[in-house]
Amino acid sequence: MFLLLLIPVKYLYVKFLYSIFLITVCSVIFQSCARKGSPEGGPKDEDAPIMVIAKPSNGSLNFDEKNIRIYFDEYIVLKDLSKQLIISPPLKNNPLITPQGIPSKYINIKILDTLKGNTTYTFNFGDAVQDNNEGNTLENFKYVFSTGDYIDSLTIKGGVRDIKAKELSKNYSVLLYKADTTFNDSVPYRRKPDYVTKTYDSVNYNFSNIKEGKYFLMAIDEENPDYKFSSATEKIGFLNDTIYLPKDSVIKKSIILFQEKQPYKFKRAKQIKKGKIQFGFTGGNKKDFKVKLLSKTPENYKDYTLFEEEKDTLNLWYTDIEADSLQYIITHKEEIDTATVFLRKKKIDSLVVSNNIKNVLHLTDTFKLTTNNPVVEIDTTKFSLVVSDSIPVPFKLKGLTSNEIGLMFDKKQKSKYTFTGLPNAIKDVYEVQSKDTLVYSFNTKEEEDYGTIILDIKKKVKSPVIIEILDKDVVVKKEYVKSSKKLEFTLLEPKEYVIKAVVDENENGKWDTGVLLGKKQPERIIYLEEVLQLRANWSINQVFEIDKE
Image (cartoon, rainbow, N blue to C red):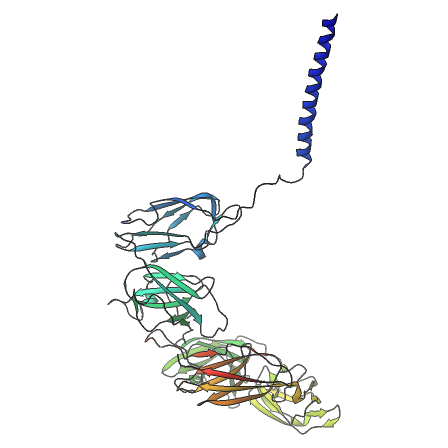
């Protein structure tokens, strides 16, 4: 009887333990399923990928392979490879690099060119190599090999800046050519350099793995790098002095980028509207661009010409005539072209009148009316100028250009003016008159609303200097200085100003650019380091030293 009782008790105990086990397992599973998101892992991966091995090895000598494979310790992706990768010396045909667009533990490089003998090649991936998960960058990763029996190890460091840009830029191509018997000034137009690098985070460049020798150093600002200079679209800068390695490893003088002035070329002549023809050209000087009509015209025929600002374009308006076409001869110094313009447009531009200010007329400015067509007649009796709503003010109207009229009068401080033109006050070249009444109201300020900048010019160069006060890129005031002196610029709007000096080496009163052929550098431009913050009724005194190079 006793033994029979023991069996159920043992059975119940085992069953009890089994139940506890099931409850524990279910509890763990339930908690795991109830948990939102992924379980917490370890610390965030902040390490860059590491190159494990390369075949052939990095730094190989007597290299004669066509395929390179570089392995990493984790999956990597290549980001912006076309912008980041720099191969120096440049190859004629870009190598085939795979895989791109998908994660991989290796980079495969298939060389499609015949490599030069006894040359060190550098594949600089910049910041293109990143790990797949966190985007950690393997900065400035390089693969280097030599087709000779040693690795070239010389370096060149320096800087680049744009002559007209006060702020620093980046992404310039810096090119190095062997200064041997085959090199001349035209080589950068025709072939790739012997070495190339770029500026990225700053204007600084750094060549590595360069061979001993003499070199010509230059930089270009190019949108799509092909390492050949195109003067029509790209800026260039260069050093006149030959670089000698290993002596000149640090270049203290910056490469100055500039835009070359383009040679003259006539482009086209085209009718824009009835009675208006546009002549387009590139390069040269506008003052040397002349247009002469060859076709026969009536005695009452007249035409008017005006260059567009900031464009190589001449607009020509002519009185209405019956003709299918007009023929012109176009000259620029010794260059001669002819053009036949077919007259197909039937609609004449209606006369449009605008003005150059919004609400406030500066005490030193001129109020101007601008028309889209040349003005041939102004009826001054239809214009009036009053101050304080009713008091007449004496004035004169002066034609500044064929389509610009200046209002001349003695301006008073802190006054409200109204300038009115009645219908038919203006007649253009097509005998079209202004239809609407023109009403313009504007105010003047007090002298106390403006400020003054006094510049103490310390000139240490022989050439004259052009001093400019800039509001952003607009020249507000300008002075021509031949010796050290103090300049006072009054009645300036309260705002930020940049001070600029141009060393006028050829004394022609303007800045002149450089040119690669002949190695002519542009005239120097010097900016005052400090931006001047001018306030109303303030005077700023500033020393500006114009030093020698």
